Image 1 (cartoon, one colour):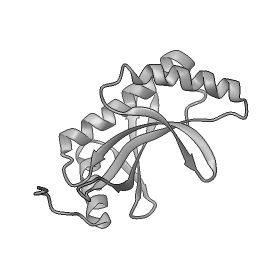
Image 2 (tube, rainbow, N blue to C red; image 1 turned 90 degrees about the vertical axis):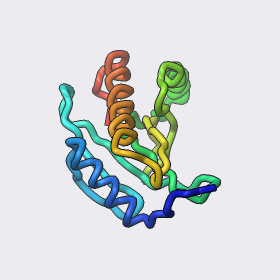
Image 3 (spheres, one colour; image 1 turned 60 degrees about the vertical axis):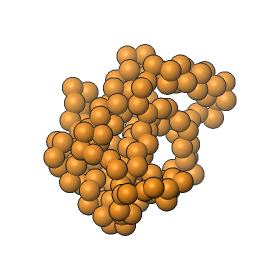
Image 4 (cartoon, rainbow, N blue to C red; image 1 turned 45 degrees about the vertical axis):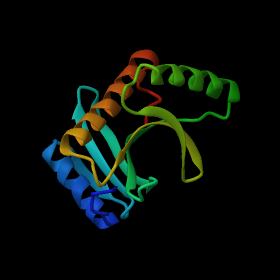
Length: 150
């Protein structure tokens, strides 16, 4: 039984923008009804957060990811393997979210993302998801420095 109201993409965008404003994020751009770009100020500077509607779950609710683009894959496959191995190790320490490979504009990136169901996400879930992304980026910086983070 799915007791939640199915939301339109416009309603999801409005919900995410409301949560962003309430949690101190700046809405930088709404690319379309699928992608909302946000920013959050940290000790490292301005951190990018991207919310993307990625599909539906078995209950036909919209799944979103709250994440951040990380590192562009290299043309050096050995380096990519080493990065993958290290990031998969970081995944084992995470209780929320994971590092993954995603494609944007024909380019591949190691990204951090936290999946959530749009219809059921609460403000606390949103804040915790953003915090998990920021924590993963900070952990990455501790290991590799911030020169390679997008």
